[in-house]
Length: 468
Ligand SMILES: Cc1ncc(COP(=O)(O)O)c(C=O)c1O
Image 1 (cartoon, rainbow, N blue to C red):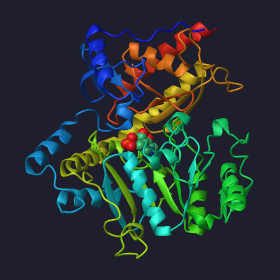
Image 2 (cartoon, protein in one colour):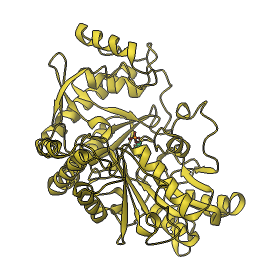
Image 3 (tube, rainbow, N blue to C red):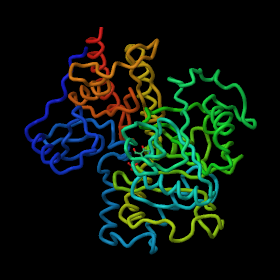
Image 4 (tube, rainbow, N blue to C red):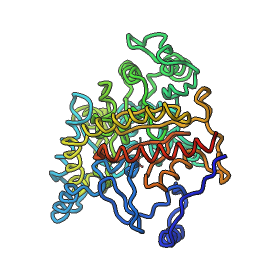
């Protein structure tokens, strides 16, 4: 049993939290472990209302890629705000939106003509992609993955397979979605071992076991793949636990989608825009989807998403099967001020941060692996660039989870570690059932990585000391 107490909260912070509680909706996921009442933030530093600084290894859920309040983003916004704040990008023309769409078409995977739809949140990009694929194919069925998180709207929640609380009591969801296991090889639901699980090919492409389940079982017994409009997935699962699939995963899905005219959608909302040390996570295996979903880091914290797809899927001037004017749109999507923030953000990411994420992320991963060798409660370290997951286990041999309540106060292991890190000045979030995630701003330096590693090491040493 671990002796753990949630971080103390100052009088000033308590007062603000009490006001918040009286007026804000109750479905927020705030925890007692990170009782952060923020005053301001800069780069990778967040300062609370008492003037205490924290090193931010969460980046507002992987949003502030350029760091908090990047001066060039502020300048771009300030300049734009004096010229035009809003006019509706669905109905009128302005260059800020066009320039951003041109840049996105250039950097997103796939050497083909593209079209872009702007929304205001990740879930809206998910919604749009569903509508695009359903409209184009006129097919009712869809495939998604267990562990996936695609947002909180009806489409987002239907496609997600992360936590039951996100779906409970909201039925009926959108019908005809089939969730299949994601290649979470550390805990394979089929009890297989990668790469031994590759027993055969699909049209010349090696098939890992979870995809043979799709090709040989689901597509044979349950649904005709020619009835499937889309397959949606995160090339690295985010909320699911920062899970990196084997390199054979995306090529096989690409092949299946091509064989059956299925629209392949990559949700790069969390993994995209430099976080993994490439523009997009799928770039690591050189596989392009038909539609790429982007949000989070695109405008350094201003709300924006982009759905970037093949021109024929999104433009009836290119293909008569594509959606027609009026069947989709958004009042705020492509807001000129946010476009300016996004263009500035992409420039900074391109010039400095993709390489930095690869470099500092590589160092962090190496050090975390070294930490794993010293700490038995770390079962696996995984991830790419600055998207790193650390899976916690009660027993490394059996991979058993810690019992849900390892403390007298009823906290689980993720809460204990994130809470202890917070007390020592590090913001770190949990992910999946029993993992920690590192998703700092992409501008962090080696010093920041060392500071975070030192805190985490101390915390895990303490926790382990209490367990033995
Ligand atoms: C992979 C992924 N898709 C979609 C979403 C939903 O984005 P939003 O909260 O902006 O609607 C998230 C949010 O965490 C995400 O991580």
